[in-house]
Image (tube, rainbow, N blue to C red):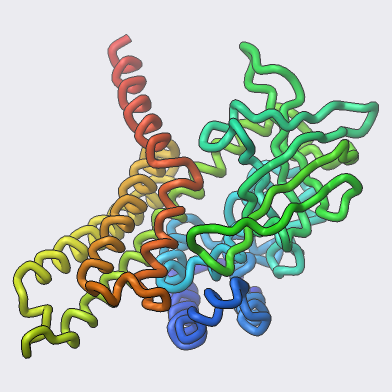
Length: 392
């Protein structure tokens, strides 16, 4: 729809955000229960999302994407977060943790081969980092990559890999040497899903986010050409993981704010229209206090994530600010969702009620892209190191 724009101006962005908001509220929200019941995104919604260019909203325009920077990404994510999180997840890896590895670290040949197809939605890319013993801290991963003449042979397994059952391309992180003083020895490879030796396990059964498929992925002596090594440099891997995860934390923070806004809106509507003893429950001061806490959290989260994105684009802070935004906004969403269930009373505990789904879906946001505990370590450790440096 917007693929021919030369740049994303404020007016262009406003059009993209407005169209996305309309799509979310008029086409997706009425089908949220259908998505949850089927544990899948309907094909017609997927095609509509492809036609809107959302599979490539953060892919540069030279490769067919919309070319949104991270500040603009946040404006879009606030809208995408307002509905079933499974919908955004379907194309989130193309734009985020998988696609951005190629955008920021890929060779020209790798970009030429993959990015246009990723942006169009022809290819679904999955970010294959997490495994037993290596979650929020990738330094502990055990999947191995061994050089064999001009090729690499990859062996190991990954778990909780988003979009794995439908992936066409895995962005795979593997250890090619032991960690030492020169670095952690982690490389990243582009592995087609149909490569010999790639196996995808059954879809995981999760607490929430029905419609978003995750699964284990096994790499049984998978041979890839040397050209599959991202950036043509084995030492790119760890830096790519850390950079892309930090960027993704701001996007997830914005999604959390969008979801919290939906929980707040549902709570306000319920409080205004539901009566107890002849009075709307929203007239009760304790209910108003819960609504006030929700509103305060949502407004604070929105301001914080917008500022974190600004600092990223300006290259002022690409480490502490993303973690601050991620931990605050996702924890805030958990609190807002809990209050939403409380405001709804017994109805809020019933399957099929929006806030019940939000309560379950929201829990994952405090885990992936680095747990809340990891974010606190990044923030606290970063502050202490900066102060020590200033006093050297």
